[in-house]
Amino acid sequence: MARHTGPTDKISRRYGVALFGPSKALERRPYPPGQHGARGARRKHSDYSVALAEKQKLRLQYGIMEKQFRGIYEKALRTRGVTGEIMLQILETRLDNVVYSLGFATSRAQARQMVAHGHICVNGGKVSAPSYALKVNDVIEVKDSSVSRQMAGRNQEASTSRAIPEWLLLNKDAFQGTLSRLPTRDEIQPVANEQAIVEFYSR
Image 1 (cartoon, rainbow, N blue to C red):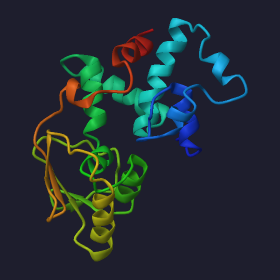
Image 2 (image 1 turned 45 degrees about the vertical axis):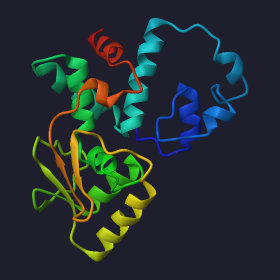
Image 3 (image 1 turned 30 degrees about the vertical axis):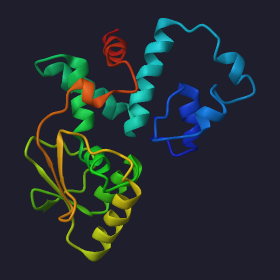
């Protein structure tokens, strides 16, 4: 399945949660899109369809294709610890998500684009893979160029309403951030039930 590039409000309404940032669409029409959306919201769903929806919510929120998402689950499964929480940590510490969380981008989609276009460095070296897995104490920095930093500066101003996660340290003036530790599940506050996703892939 390809990455979603269509209207985001419809997707958020379909799953009943703002997947791509704050949206007033859910306040105006708190039911799925389509002619029978309001009636469909009351329809009973099977356990499989519920688990599938949980998986889709998390995958769409982070902008990841199905093959990549399955790979993240399998990596978490091989890692010692609680599979669901580890999966969330892997998602949160992807380079594109951290660029977004630091406020250098106004959305995860924009953060992916910034990384892919060479605007972001990790530990002093340019990294162009949005899926790059960051480690504790890695330093994320906006490239030292006028174009990169002007763009990041504008995005920071537009992102002032979003709090920087406690597991990240931000030096706003230097356009730098540091992954100080791994986030806990409570800090991530996932939009989906990660245990249902683990069970979905374990079928």
